[in-house]
Image (cartoon, rainbow, N blue to C red; front, side):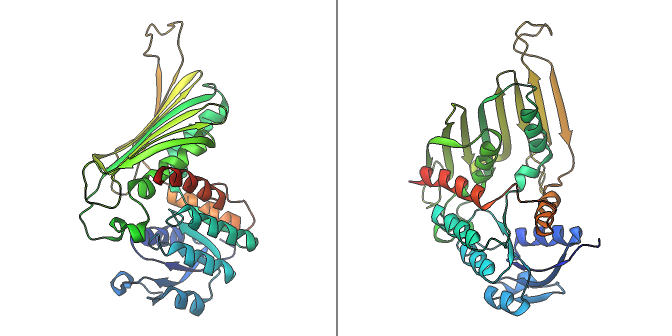
Length: 333
């Protein structure tokens, strides 16, 4: 492509590590030279140098870019170590287990201003979200006044896996999955100054991690947003309703690799109080459906463009990470 290929290592080769490996390989701007995982089995079938110790991987390969796809408890150490070694960093969410973790990485990034730090909040790059953001900013439907989000999946909290270990994960469904919807609500509605909510174990009574969270938030200028984050939805579900002064936007479904969240679509309605359509309370609807998920590709492109000076990090900044973890910390109190 003519541009610089960045010498890159990936720390953590679970599902997300493999996803980033594929996206960065397809992009072409990253020369992946090293892979690390605590499990040797996860490193089979790769041509790159492999390691089970992340410090040794970074020290031995001396990369320009470190991609962090580890368990939550390890993320802050790897991110800060990489920044201090002069590496640019692309890190998975959540940004650690706590607000303090996110602030530590943010502060380390400030101390190393030449290094770029980006977090992987890929939901902002989904087609339906891009369309909703454009529609809101156009003013066609007026001003946002409220939003309601539901993000749920089926989870088994009896499984012996790291996400069910509170010491490693730091939290349950709100931190693991709900964080995406919280980030989208901030992105589409605004910064929240009032935050209330609670978590509970409605089904998995003996789990230290919550299976349910309900959150209500308000911005300084009175916009309201609610979220139900659930590990007991049983049928995977993604719904986001946005109410505006002159209309309504509905986001339903989300394209994922499993296709378990259904078709991804956005529908919008323009307020029709004069019943020009003859259907009071049921105005004409306009729907767009999507059959392609380019979020991983677009996310990597933004990171690369920032590395090469062609752009900057707009989504998944260190400040975004701190703000969303601040919300979660208020719910976990």
